Length: 253
Image 1 (cartoon, rainbow, N blue to C red):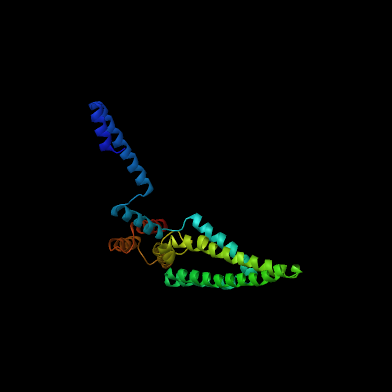
Image 2 (cartoon, rainbow, N blue to C red):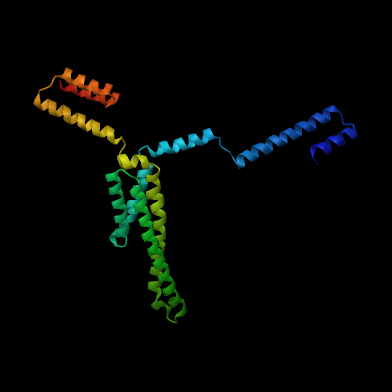
């Protein structure tokens, strides 16, 4: 019974103001419970919350790969090893290896996208071929009087079909997904790097410059510190790089 009908019944029965208030309170509680359940079933996000979620995903893409994701790549490499040994996995391995090489050369993650697509395309062709072979030998296996003549061909075809299907899942879960989560970092800094490439390059350059200066003995520490301070003021190096270079200069002096 809805609220208006219950109120009308209450007035005719002379329930009084106290019963009227209890009825209103009970309906308000029911409404709040229903709203909470509805929010749990279909949560909504404001524009600001959606922006925060997108920002977190973008930040993760520009962070180094954690040990868990790197471990997945190692497991994938181990699973690929038997297929390479038995030769049928050489072509997919070449696709992925060439994709990684082109990504490092061009600093563009789309090379990995293309390599994985080629890997999956080749594997799908192999899977379809194994399925057709299984159907052909399965027909002979189940229809021939001496079925054991065809049992090797039939079961080997099924086995290879299962392996091809497994590689379709493995390359997505253990190779592409971990790298795609960190695509902006990987394309610039590499898969196993923990520091930005620009930082590593600047540190290596500073070490070479200091070593050259030390060998030639043609510089003044004060002059070198002035040069490094100028680079920091102009924004060419960070505060951390300046402090490290200054510490090395003072130590060698």
